[in-house]
Image (cartoon, rainbow, N blue to C red; front, side):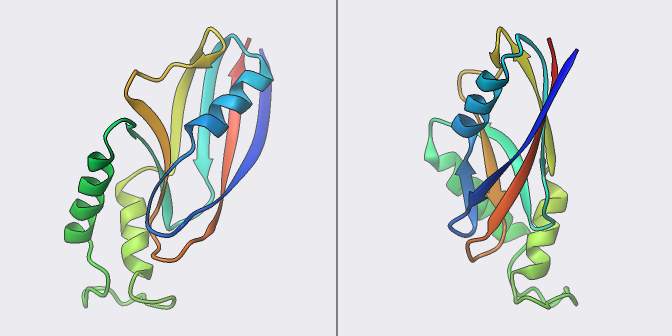
Length: 139
């Protein structure tokens, strides 16, 4: 078994889903594992990772509208507002989604389905610099 690890850095444009499949797939190809498992981990408490529909942008807009209704900015329920009205809602959104993903590596590539893509989901309104740790294990 071989292991490989790296950190990819992305600058987000603010709240929303940033497609990162290409960058992740390029790195996986570069480590030249034929069979294995890739783990992705976002090193932040106000962003998350998703595997989601990659063909129809309506899916992303619908997800954002759902979260806006579920966890609105400025909700008086929240005490933690140190960085603004979107601070605690961003933490709740991250808690409701995922901070890590596992994707099989098959025949040297990510074993994603036809309509699946990997996204960094930024939950803050302003753009941020985000780090994602990748760890691949396999042969």
